[in-house]
Length: 503
Ligand SMILES: *[C@@H]1O[C@H](CO)[C@@H](O)[C@H](O)[C@H]1NC(C)=O
Ligand SMILES: *[C@@H]1O[C@H](CO)[C@@H](O)[C@H](O)[C@H]1NC(C)=O
Image (cartoon, rainbow, N blue to C red; front, side, top):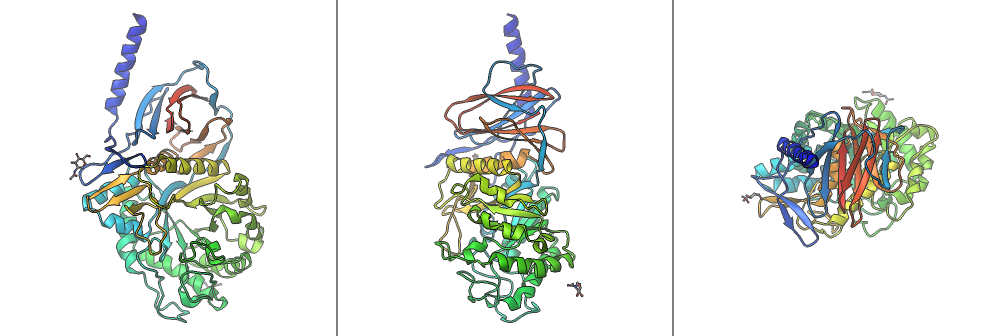
């Protein structure tokens, strides 16, 4: 009888917590590859509020079968209950890197797809990514000019060869229609907490050895200074629109402009390490430092992991390293290289941060795929184990074909717009990103977790809460024990699920 009362009390308590949780649940739809949540002009799922009283914990869960964020609360115990082989021990954990944030990219295609939806559906989409009841992205990338995910190939000074003073430099329609308006809205939704990273794909063809947007081509040496000034112009023009940046990368994927590859149609510009050291140390670095954008974080590499072993040529060059703050990494070849390659992002001259700056699955689109969410989750967890401070996805929104894309390189995205139906689909990748961006807040301290059996990231947030993200890739549920100076938590994590425990 006593036992029964205890259970009734617990159920009442649970009901109280459930009532206390605001939020729309996922309107889930079955697709060829799994499930998505459907949003439209009048309905969209939201993230239930964080509600953690002293002595309790809150668990957020997304599973391969049930998308959205379901949540429950429980009591922290003073001693362990039962036995678990999956243990997270934070009692003596050492603080590691600081979290910068998570996000995606304001590509031209992303803005075009947002624009294709009815305006209230657009609001629901932007709120899903940026608002307090969404997944609260804070760190996003903005292309300087065109990328493959643009409607046309362009730079800001295409038609005036030899314009060394950049007199004809001008932002283009894609900025004015499809990037700037959504960056401004996103920043408002995030209470001005949005931090932006600028990356460039190519210089105007006339500045390049191959006179083209794509293919194997380098910056002509006579334009090294002009090209540095071009960056400053970009930051000035965006500043006039009220948009400030946090950082920049030196060049998106220089490898594509160096080697013949299957993706050689992508706007690109190559740099050898010798060229990069020269341009960075004599032109970009000094130019930025002598401008009003002298506090921007400068990141090198911005490319895949296969070329990381060559990176020390830059990271051990003292002239370049006066200007470098971090290393930017793209996720595409991480499954082909040993994780230990990430150690090549360290310099003996200086402490650098590591940031994931681009990732996507595809092609083609696989609507509803949990496997693709899993690939994101595992990559982020690995990057964080090697000291990464954040992770930025590629296109935030693509259409149902995985585009538009100016070349034949359509891919997948966490959100897919269906403009004909006036609705959009939030894929498992969206919820995977959400567990990181929503709960591992900027300025959190990553904690060293002594555990080898369950994939996890643990942080101490600026609000004093711990957040422990747990990923169960297996087909069976697991009982995980989390020990900290706040007590012991035993949680059940369902098969194929991502969970965040806050306490
Ligand atoms: C929007 O989605 C909600 C929930 O799925 C549904 O009830 C409603 O009919 C949809 N509205 C339109 C206009 O499709
Ligand atoms: C720094 O910028 C000023 C103009 O803002 C310019 O006159 C000066 O030559 C620059 N110095 C260097 C070293 O680039």
